[in-house]
Length: 359
Image 1 (spheres, rainbow, N blue to C red):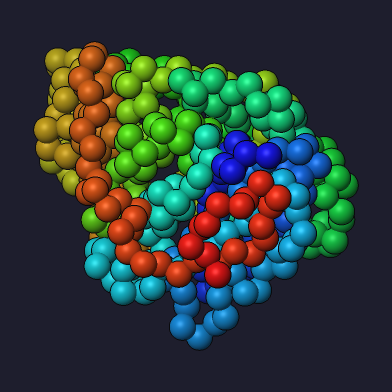
Image 2: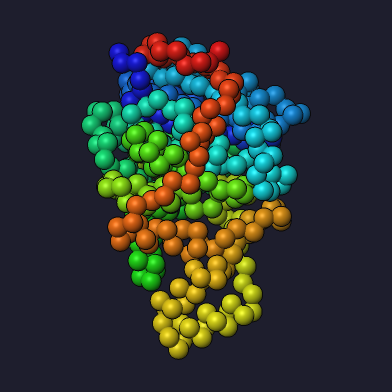
């Protein structure tokens, strides 16, 4: 047994009733993954960041029913006090900064390979078969499609893991497949669609990039796509796993992409049409970068307006595509790495003999 896991799965959450049955879904997803890793014999860890705990609820870490006696899987929690959250713009309207919450876990992840995942997503069995042989390439990032599924019968959560995953596989789903980018963007051809739910990348590259890029607002727009393009700029190749490797995402009303809207002003519409009709689509695209439009809003977060995708994502990614190296935007203590955050060991694997600083 080694003293480090082969792979770390990093997620985050808080017990604030974010969606109906949230705790139940997170509990099932976490336990299902732990059992899959255990059966596959993969030395691994699940790191859960409890970001900005709700003051009137018990901790999420305290209400999850985590297995206590797994040989191959450690489960750890990291608690981030609310005062860290309050410094971000929009903190009063959104209780989680998903990018920074993920970075807290990524910074503390010990795996040779690391991926961030949403707390309520499930992996199809072939995903574990791709990891189990321990043949992942440290200079490759691994991707697969997310499949959104609508849960109409809550009794589905009473199924055992195998039956639940078989049910997901048989249900109608909406896959987030590879998207053709506009030619004017001039980007590398990477599968960034829903990449925040799974981008398996060597821990060394996560540390080199210092996790997700910094966002002073709680919106965390484009950060997962930026990580992929930044890694590619450093020479990392992309490998897309077969179609039967899937991320299952139970649908709910607060999915981030469904809440994003673009903000157009009349002059921007006129300029867009003029440039596209009289000059070129390339010129219209450049104008979007220069003047930073259309900016973006997320429903229920009224105090924050996010920058355009052209300014925030396309501008740096297109420069990296022609040879520029990504600039690190996070400080040296990224992921609150120098802060004495409380850690809790919820389940300790046999391989986990090194001190973690956890309870």
